[in-house]
Image (cartoon, rainbow, N blue to C red):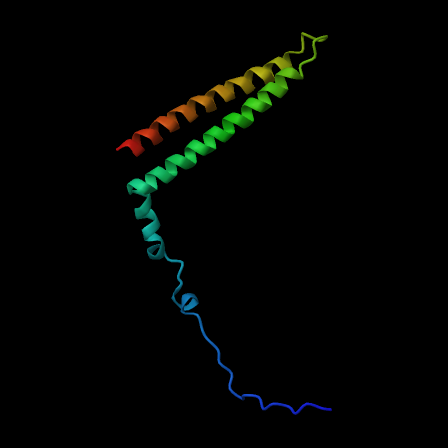
Length: 113
C-alpha cells in the first residue's frame, strides 16, 4: 500500500532584504541619534541613566563600606590599613550620595519644565 507521490513544484521563491543593501556605517546614518540627545526627551534619558548609575553605585559602595568597617578586628585596633579602607570607602559613598542627589535635582527640574 504505497501512497502515490505528489508532484513537486519546480519553482523556488527567495526574498532579499533591502536593509543590508542600504545599511552604511557612515556618520550620516547616525545623525538622528546625535540630534535626539539635544532634545528634551534625550536629555531626560541621559539624566535618568546618570541617576540610576549613581544610585546603584551609592548602594553598592555603602554595602562594601559597611562590610569593610565590620571586618576590622577589635583585638588589633592599630591596624591602620583597615581603618583607612573603611574611611575611604565611606568617603566614596558620601561622594556618590551627593552625586545621586544632584542628579535627582537635575532630573526633577527637567521633568517639571
